[in-house]
Amino acid sequence: MNSFWSFNSICSCIFGGFTNGFFFFGVQEGETAPVDTLLAIIGEKGEDISALLVEPEEKSTKKEKTVSKTTEDTTTNTVETPEGIQVITMPRLSDTMTDGTVATWLKKEGDTVEEGDILAEIETDKATMEFESFHEGTLLYIGVKEGETAPVDSLLAIIGEKGTNIADFVASYKTNSSTEAITPTSKEEEKPVENKTATTTQKTTSSSGGRILASPLAKKIAKDKNINLANVSGSGENGRIIKKDVENYTPAVEKPVETTQTQSTQTTVVNNFIPAGEEGFEDVKNSQMRKVIAKRLGESKFTAPHYYLTIEVDMSTAMASRKTINAIPDTKVSFNDMVVKACAMALKKHPQVNTSWIGDATRYNKHIHIGVAVAVDDGLLVPVLKFTDQMSLTQIGGKVKELAGKARTKKIAPNEMEGSTFTISNLGMFGILEFTSIINQPNSAILSVGAIVQKPVVKDGQIVVGNTMKITLACDHRTVDGATGAQFLQTLRTFLENPVTMLA
Image (tube, rainbow, N blue to C red):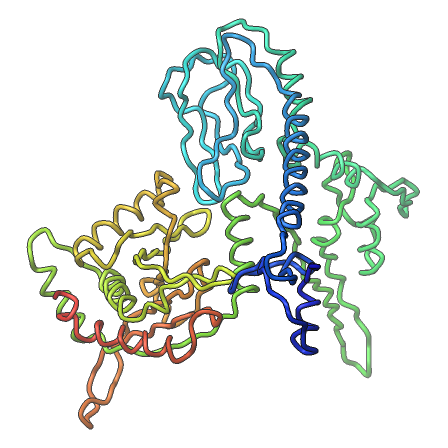
């Protein structure tokens, strides 16, 4: 005699006792399983339970067969590529890319394409990158126009022999494809709406009996301001009075009113000054990079419980050390390079800060990859210095300069912006004294670096001129406790205030 025991059944036995027998455990210690799955079997010692163990497998096999059949059904309706043409789809230019926007086409339909030619510039979620052709022939078709966004693997272009008829193939491809380009609303599509409003006029009778053409908005403003439209000149089509005509209208100053009071003349001046101006705004379409930055920063801010720790560092010794280092020929080290090096060394001493929250576990990264935030036209990119702790100050300086240059000229590759375990954002060069940053997930922390300022400080009981810099560490409280973050900053301060320790 044997019986299945689910999770709920076992709990009942724990609190109420259970009979003699033996256990078969279906879920081992430390494993997690859904409610009502096979947890254990109780029965007589030596009893055959193989049939009970086979049943779940059979169900699993049936499920796999069903899934397999479904997969076969969904893959039977494929589009056969005609001979002599190459179908180019939207490439996945980074591991997190789901769709791309064509910023610029460098070739147009009908152009000859050689292998290695740059076809287009494509905006990814991280950067705008050049897309190179691996085929040669004639560009027969462009499937995603400039400014359009399309999912990865959707039809981007077709290259083949000049004169090849691809109309039926393109139509069939679009019919069978579930991905379509998202076309932004063009200015031409918006114009009819604006024109309709602008050309709507009302008939107003002037004092001379003629009709005055005025838009409804202009008439309303005139009524509110008690302005006679007969005195307003229209700048619209056929002399129509529009909003700005009424808003910019200034009544003529009336002649002084003369009144006689006991041999004296009193002049009344009428002041009808009305401030005038024109309201306006412009909606600028967000780039793919800007949309992804907004999405990820929002996710980080609202999912990771941020807290902030700020300290002030004496940079006098660091300034003297930097001057000495840069006196060496062909050597250039910045304060930011010194901060990067100090962070790498501090992370080795505080591995808890070099972690990632992955839900059921905290991942301790054995390597140290530091991301350095770089401002670009479309937003913010974070090039990553791989194995930063193994690099010297001069190597860090050269690598940061190289990656920052690539980021600003849109030449940086996706793999050069992936894998960071810690991030640094420096706004000191802009005169910012202190600020906080949003954690660049999956990192557990980000350091915000302010400007070095000259100020009075107390040293050995004396007020002297000092050079200080404020740094703020933003931590994810799920992985880094307050004491851990504070200890990391203490170690970081030691390295920065004693740069010679970083040269060992």
